[in-house]
Image 1: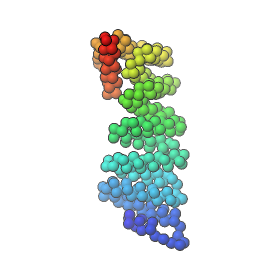
Image 2: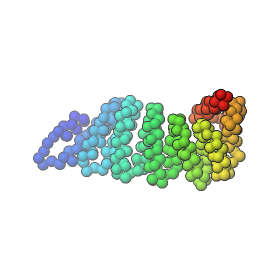
Image 3: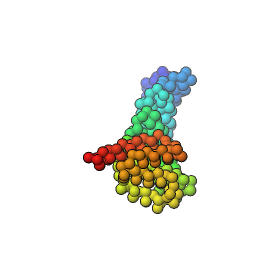
Image 4: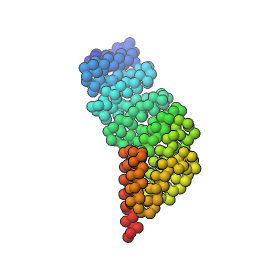
Length: 281
């Protein structure tokens, strides 16, 4: 099939329509990709789909068809050639945005972010989650936008950009307060924002934030999360490692700490030790 497609592209006619030639070649490359997939040769299938997409871009066929081929090519490349998968997905996203299909662009920006996350490319993943959230918001999908924003917040904190993480956690918490389906997660968002304040070593900022959060959300005020943050803040302010450890242990015994919170608490503990040593000198 690929040889037929290449032959079709090389053919010349004084009277023929070049766009029809590219369209016919694109169809042949697509058929070739199906054959490769049946033969369990995903890399060759991906290459054929990439060629099909390139052909379709030279025809009157909509950009959607070419973008669809790039997406399929990315799926073929995923397991064996992640860089080729990223390249193909980026090309698809560019075509969707050019065509004003932001719902599709959002979907594949998120998939690309997930692919990069799996490859531990957190900085690049963060950027694509950010873009996905903007496209979802543009399409009125607030829940999907928030989901991507929270990913940005988590990665930002892991990359020591606590200020950005705080801004996002607070933003998502505020927008969730007016939504009956989402408001139950507000305590979690405020907890994470509070932890990021302490990870910055900003006790004053943490105390002000806790007062603000309590006024914003009656559910947060006096909750386990609220009390936990108060205990941590007091321990930090008093340079009390034992108080800090007791607060963490008590909270963990009731609400199991996940990997992200545990990592942030380690950062806070180290910051507490540094401040304690400075206070002693």
